[in-house]
Image 1 (cartoon, helix red, strand yellow):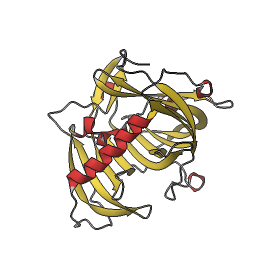
Image 2 (cartoon, helix red, strand yellow):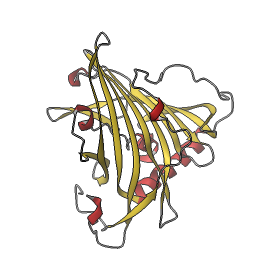
Image 3 (tube, helix red, strand yellow):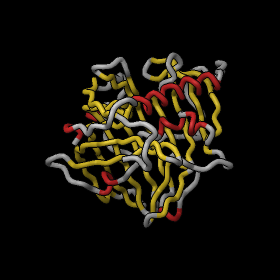
Image 4 (spheres, helix red, strand yellow):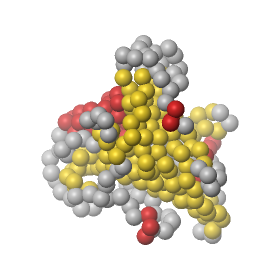
Length: 291
């Protein structure tokens, strides 16, 4: 599980988690798949964009929340529903489908820094399809605001706005040209091609939690045949039942990919979270119900 022998040993304790309670979650029953990526470079609409914002304080709070997630989670599982559609260059329909998967995320602390791994296993009645095998890096996105990664980006506060009736600060971020791109990459025949990201995050004013995040590529990645990729992520609180700890995890994700000769639209919906907590004074014990 670890790239090297850790300086301490872990015990992994499964925690049944209360489901996300987000009033702003997208209503999947009333939505259809359509090409509607977020406009990262468009001006922000609504809110009070003139309200003074202390960026350093906002980032300090956001780092504390990201650090809590890394400190409290060894991994988590969830049930994931994926709906997808593939469109041709002229907008013609190529393929569509949906499925339900057991989704597993593992956090690893390596010599080169934090790493996050995703895996999906089709549940009975579902099958793997191209959209379900993509490791889109959903948990890593909020870690942009972890102190280990904040320095990779130029960030600015664009003002205040409401999201889900909560007061938030809108923070724009963009990959710095003088720093390595460590958040996401595309692999082609085993060779990684780092992705330069830009986007916005709506961060709760009272807690520093990332409520919503939108991101896209700053430039195409020809070697991976990726012209553009957009993500729109809604986060929601997941509460440990037996501990006074709450973490914010992706609840719904809209992913849009432009690959030149075709486009993909993928909706992800997560439910039934099972959290595994980290303690630093006992020996690791593999949970039987993590499978």
